Structure formats: C-alpha cells, structure tokens
Length: 159
Image 1 (tube, rainbow, N blue to C red):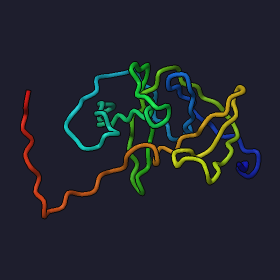
Image 2 (tube, one colour; image 1 turned 90 degrees about the horizontal axis):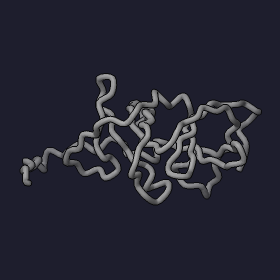
Image 3 (cartoon, helix red, strand yellow; image 1 turned 45 degrees about the vertical axis):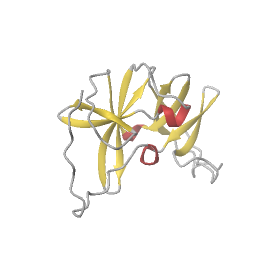
Image 4 (cartoon, rainbow, N blue to C red; image 1 turned 135 degrees about the vertical axis):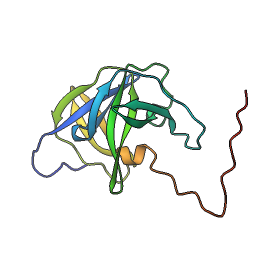
C-alpha cells in the first residue's frame, strides 16, 4: 500500500454494518436519514431491494452488507444517502446501516492491486484498519436499454 501524496487529511463518514465499520468519502454523502418504508417492485437487479422516497426523489436502496460481510442486514438504524457516479451522471443511493455514523478526518492509503474492486483505499482509525468504499463498484449502475427487437411482456399480478 502506498500513501496519498502529501499528508493531506480528508473527511470520511464511518458506517457500521453489523460489527464491522467501513468508510465513504464525506463529499459523497448527502444525508443520514431514519429508516422509512421501502417500496418493492418486480425488477431484475438483485442488488436493489426497492426504493425510498426522499426529498422528491426516488432513491434505490442497496443493501451492500451481503457483499461486504457475507450476510444481509436484518435490522436498520439509518439509511446513509450517498451520491454515486455513473459515468457523467450522479444518482443518490440509500445504504442501510446498523449503527451510528461518525465523521472523521484521516489520511487515506491507496489500495493495492490485490484489493477488491470495491475498495478505494484504507484508513487507520482508533486502532482499526477500515476499508474506504468505492460505491461505483459496489452498487449497480443503470441497466442497458431494452432492445426494440424484444418487446416487453406485460407483468401479471398473482397472489
């Protein structure tokens, strides 16, 4: 691992998923909100469990815990609303968290070639080594447009 050039402190939000902590760059965070109703609908993106409505926006909810800690979250304390970049577009995404979030200033160590794609760096804080998350690699991007050659089949409501 190599340090970012200089000794520049950056702001990060620490989030808790079960008993582990992860970090997201503070400039990617829009807000921290209490849990609200998740609207579920039929779709083919397993990473999106549904959407919440926040400030007039439809925000996809992505439970990234299964990818990070090996199991989905059963309880949620908050949703961390983060801005995720899809190429030139920016979209909000809601990340369920199980504990309090904390704002810290720290130096980030860059990832090595052997780190997972969702790791954008590492922090050392209070004796712990914490992964800085790359939301672009961790959450799903926009789907491919539906081809005109294969028309959509209407969904049938079943009990």
